[in-house]
Length: 363
Image (cartoon, rainbow, N blue to C red; front, top):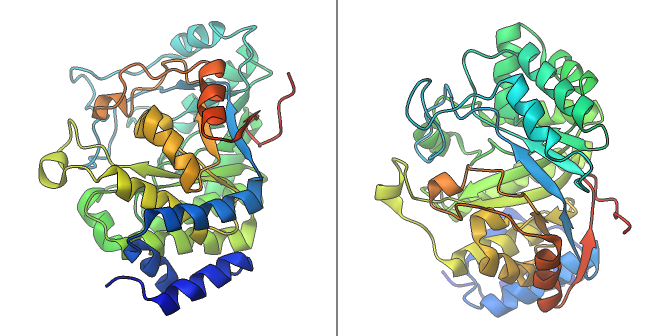
């Protein structure tokens, strides 16, 4: 049912005074018919965190493999070993890829891929070392909790020991992938083999304890409900209360092309995407940054997201990721710095180049 005037007044008062929103507040925001009102409220929160700044970075991706032991019904990226369209980069392949960026002003390499059954933690430690040796000035953000879960278990290591090994070889930060939706019932339907929610959260907690900053994500727009989304956000918020280790949150829209789930559910509307971004900004009062991931949203919706609470539009990418292009998004995702800055300026904000840890990069 639509949000009542009393509910709206309570939520507006809480946001105005910087007070935490409840589960019921989050559900009420999803029922609010006025997108402009949501944009105004979310912008109030984002300005409290980040003023008029909108962040971007100069980065590229390495995707070591799309061979994966998991079989998630929403995934367009995964292939079996030897299947058409599969790949598995060697260490020499990774070295050659990195050499393209020697002398370039990139500040981050983002490394994620499938959970390959034939590769162990020592291979990935060596991969990190190759990147570090080739690009010593570049911060390495690598491996989802799902990848680390598999590495640790198959090496007979604790998560702490596994993360320390990776850290010693160059791991500086972790991305937030693999979270999907934390609700166990939904998870059993869309990613039954994948690391469960409790383990995902524990691996991030362990990383935070080791001084490894991480991001967090939520995959939305498939079979989950608004209640599942709010539950997901609150679980992240509770961990952030404990560790303070999340730098950014990325709401990821489910893309329906080339996967088993697409024929069943399709894709949600742009208005629902913007509503979700606004709700995320208002609910996650203790995570500083909300990222509008443009390879997934597209450039136009990404710019609109800046008016609904997002303050980060990710990076240049340089046509180095295939995860979303294989699901029907831009086949060659790449934006140069002037393009990124124009998008931000045209939305009325101040372009701010950052490094992996949200330090401003001076030009």
